[in-house]
Image 1 (cartoon, helix red, strand yellow):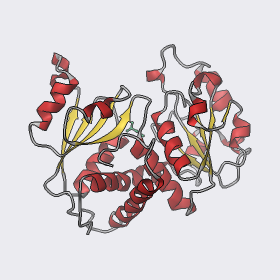
Image 2 (cartoon, protein in one colour):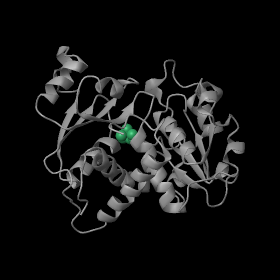
Image 3 (cartoon, helix red, strand yellow):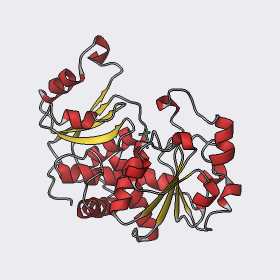
Image 4 (cartoon, rainbow, N blue to C red):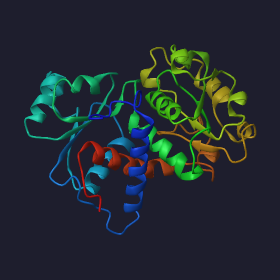
Length: 305
Ligand code: CP
């Protein structure tokens, strides 16, 4: 693959290569000297039209760990505010001789569009509610790291699946790897194309938690909902918010994941978020190694050491 636009259609072998390479970089990041040379001389533009904490910082850290030169672009403070188009913006940046673009945008399909405007390698860092492939890769890496296997595991995703690019990328990636994904949300927040996604869907959270090896919570994405959250935040918390009481329905060792940012006390209670079964900060840690792997493999890096 030349670009990473999503996990839909990416093969089992390609996903496994990325995960294995991420494991190698995870080892590198345990060393005292964490910087390795493979992307020396390459320039990577972090092209963010939407806010981000984890993805933006971990891409920048991954680029620095690989000895690349990061160039950070965000809309605030740029000439986008003067009406410059996306195409003109990217072609002006490309004219400065860059190699790769990591793009986050509020509209689905923008990473694909950029492949028609530039020769640079494009990596999707989240486009609307389409895909967020590096998030899913770091999620899968984290599960494999903890449970030492993937095939046959049951992952239940609870939350605003309709608007979630994280859910979509995880569904494509996990199904390719032989994992079983169940979706749980109020009917208003289940995707309209859930048949096409090929996963069982339920509105009964107690059913969904039973037998799950991994429970992944998603926040209600109020910024993408046109009429506000329905049901209300109070009802949402009561029926779908995961707390210690609801966790009694899950397996004792069920793992808790969340891509962040968490709305504590809405989709996830603090005592569950901070429990020993929570992988939430491991996900963030693994974001750096996963993004190093993607940048390295697409950037034509050679010597990992
Ligand atoms: N998980 C995730 O994409 O977080 P940010 O929006 O902070 O990057």
